[in-house]
Each structure stands twice: as C-alpha cells, then as structure tokens.
Length: 130
Image (cartoon, rainbow, N blue to C red; front, side, top):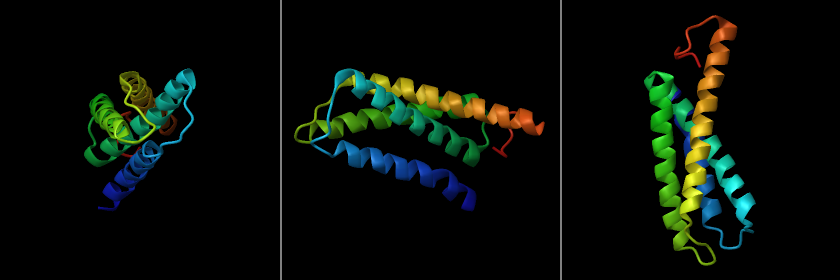
C-alpha cells in the first residue's frame, strides 16, 4: 500500500495542479509559449505517470510508457474540454498535440532515467527498484 501511495500521490497532486491552472480565466497566452508550456507541463505528467505505473505494476518500461502517454493524452483532452467551459479560455486541439508530445518525452525520460540508474547500480533495466 505504501508503494502505491508513494507512486500515485505525485500524479494525483500534479493532475490537480493542472486542473486548477486550467480553471483560471486570466492566464496570459502567447501562441508559441503556450505550446511550449503545455509540452513541459505534460512532460512532467508523462514522467510521473510512467514512474507510477512502473512502480505499481512492475511492467516493462515500454508498456509503462505507452500507458502513461495514453493516460496523459486522455487527461489533456478532458482538460481542453474543461477549458472550453471556463470564461476567457478556449479549447485548442493543438494544445492536446503539444501535451501528447510532452507526455511522450516525459515517459521516455523516465525510461532513460531507469536505464541510467540500472547501469550505475549494475541491475537489469526493468528492475522494480527504480
């Protein structure tokens, strides 16, 4: 149970922070920086999701990464729907694209991090000790 909580809590807190930011009607928006912000925001989410899935399930890193990207992209879609109903905000399909690309980068970064830690410790890469 402790492993599950330590894996899931960062994801839940970060997703809540994304939701709260999305509910703000007066965030400044410039097109290029907006997409970069979405990319970075979801790179972190992709990393955290891949980590949580890997810690809880022990699946191989590719499977964890694919599921993390699917979950993050699904959340990005619901986030845009949420923004559609927030005064002063809009739903932009290109935000979902930036979010998806960010989550791919984040989940790949997690796999690279696990691989690096494993090599430094002399462990197999898919080890649950990540």
